[in-house]
Length: 138
Image (cartoon, rainbow, N blue to C red):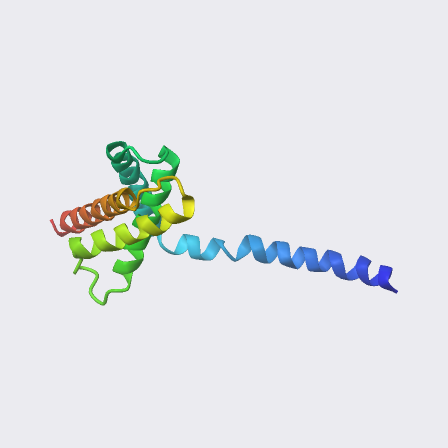
């Protein structure tokens, strides 16, 4: 009896789990391209600030910057009026995300450098989003 259950139940269970794993993440990723853009901008800014702080690898700095860019996007998405983008708030959110990501990745043991990398990414996202908004008005 156990063999019959294994032969009938396991393949259908595997097919259902495989379909749910591959189909469910597709929908949220396609919902908002701005998250991907902000993460890419943050990764680039993280690499640049990593050159100045001389702490961590390029990949580690890119990860900190990408996390900070995504966090800034998330924080700005929570606002009622998305036009009220504050540089100070974006710096704080980016710095917080940088320090948390730096603690997780462990690439740089200096928290101040992690904050600088994250805040630089937050500032880059803020500058980019403000320029995009101002260019659309013209």
